[in-house]
Image 1 (tube, helix red, strand yellow):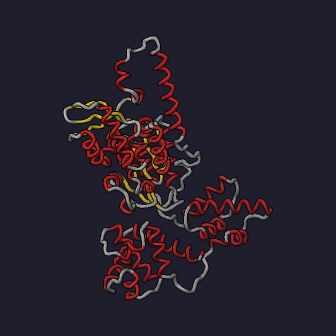
Image 2 (image 1 turned 90 degrees about the horizontal axis):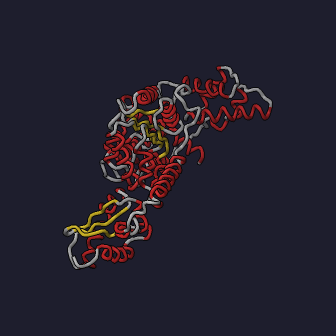
Image 3 (image 1 turned 120 degrees about the vertical axis):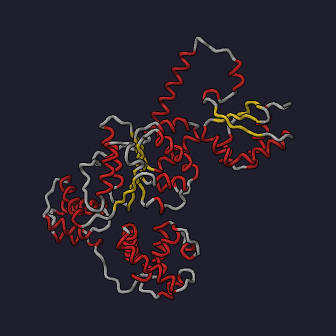
Length: 467
């Protein structure tokens, strides 16, 4: 090979910088080095395996074409991770004699810098809430399975339920259980990491920009229990899903525990890679539903103790009847009542509950919700576009919401089968009847269908009230 490997790669980078966007170039190609030739391959040094994988999957065809144009030869390319301290002027470093007098000082400085970077990453992990323990979690029929599974993984992490996937609507206790698992694990001296999927994404982006991907991985791939909240946030984010996939695999193969929360069952998370979806389904999936009135009353009793106030059961029961959506609404309503009582000097009574929480009471509406409103709420709930409901695509993530729409348009919209068919892409009324009946029967035998329909009815009514 007549041309120098370093010069060939430098010339190729100049050409590539004009062919791709500046952010992509800065993230994936900037700082890479042409190392040598091995047979008919150009060896290029990069900063991490993550960069190698991305270049291999996304840019390799363009890179090969560019190299061929510049060198006049058909060459292959091999990406090789190089030590971070040697990423600049590798050849010079290899030829330069070692400075033995300063080696200990250099190693010490590198060690301190490594500790500093890892400490910065660790600081970004979200702390555990002191009140979110198993002892403070009120168990009822709607969350008993999720609670039992969470206790099990905290007692024997990485054993029976791995991963543990918790899902349900907002304010139903998913985050509480994640924190409770974390508290139980730390008392055993286990290394835990708790963070949201959004935070995982932001830290990944930051590590790529700062070229500290290895430090990032050491934090989350060397933990005993990884707790990820709101994993649906990574849907559609290819780089984050790629990194999380490898993090998941490494932890799972090492027998470490993974606990994930989401607002939906894995099968219902749109734009989630199939390889991640299947891994989420490997272990235990447990849902948390809206607690019944008895459980809501018990939750209020616990919260009243925290506020160090005593409330009659009839008052607690009345609050529980008015707050029907989630635990967060319960807590907020009680806090508001306590604040109003202190400010006005009025005791908490049924009358004060009614006047203070009047905004939660259902208003009677004489006209049914519109077709557009029902469809908009369903699309928002399942993260779909209207055109997805109108399409002929029979994939479950489209067909299931479409049949839910058929049911709700018939039941709460009081719309004829023919009109529903026209509204959903000119479908035959027999198709609408089939979908409506399927969901009607499914409600009694499938908890997920029942929960989704219940949640959607609440959302539709709430949006109608706002409108």
